[in-house]
Image 1 (cartoon, rainbow, N blue to C red):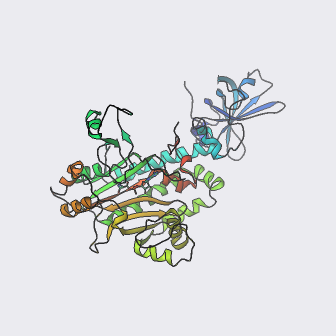
Image 2 (tube, protein in one colour):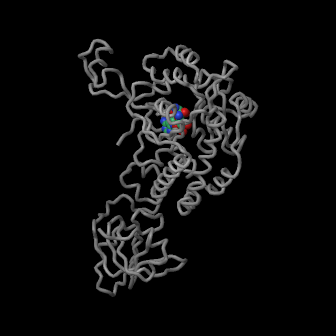
Image 3 (spheres, helix red, strand yellow):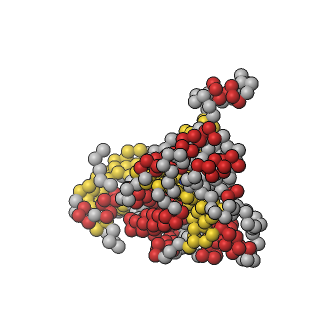
Length: 456
Ligand code: 4AD
């Protein structure tokens, strides 16, 4: 179907005076005495294109005035008020009619209401902007790593080993409920892979394999977590950016994470001006200025031990009590980012008991070289570490956790054959989108959210 993107017509003045064909969905329609107006949107732009119909002409337009209908319009591009352009229609064709039960009748619907119709909410301004920001940021992230000699790796989604060791893996099986098996062993022997398998919670372990050959790699794909966390920032299926770097220690990883975030947010502010203004107007007043501030200052850095002291001395009445050794809850993370530092802050060197087996053990014997990045409004968006590169220390940490070493033989081999200091992190892509848009529920920054108790 030959037609021009509305984005091109709106942004390129050379279309003025030309005859064009556009397609799109009717966002609003007004009928006055001699003229009718349609606000048309084809998804390529947050801004709509106004179609002007001379009712005294012989254009058949009545059916095209229905909200949600899809239409094809031919006409001339003319200048309109406020440096905009509009189309003087010469013909209108109804492509797909839309009856009155079309649910998006109001100008603004609540996000909760829109969640009940993921197949239609993409046609609202909010989701138009969110999905474009996702797309632009994804491309920026790829470009950041590609320009710096990182290799993009596709790690397996089905795995036999649990990376985080937190027992949050969805199981992959072709058998399902059955009373035919007396033992677990019998069941898994008969299953597709001949052993227990699940959906990967992180591509890190295989990412390390690739980094030990290619030096600098990153992954960008889905991760799955069967966490029973019904919160505004947890999804069962989320997109995960995981760089992994050889010959790198924790400070190198922190420096790269900060530089990457600043670079991609700069590109977002430059590329998505309309979308970011929309979020500033409708979701978080001043968000553009806050992001500008963020990228023009150093991020904070604080050790876990000092963060605990800050929380204990805060005088705040936290729901979860604070003591050395406790896991930081969202309320603690947000207090540190929002009240103490008032910016993004890296928290480093957590107690080894609350972190994963693979993290480098610090000389104090109590902490590991871990890092989380906390941001105002969301809390943790990045989790990473330097990895334990010493074979014996890694085996000891795995044994302390009663892990089945035979499932991790490839991973352990890396520590035998030319082991090097290395590290990386995982950035939750949806958490980043929440942070840069001010949209406060993770269900509203992805096309089809998967959360506990809900799938569509
Ligand atoms: O802190 P996490 O669990 O770290 C890892 O998975 C490491 N293997 C990453 C690495 O070092 N390569 O997860 C990393 C990030 C979190 O900071 C968060 O942004 C996001 O992944 N994340 C989730 N996002 C949405 N829903 C969930 N259920 C998430 N769980 C983690």
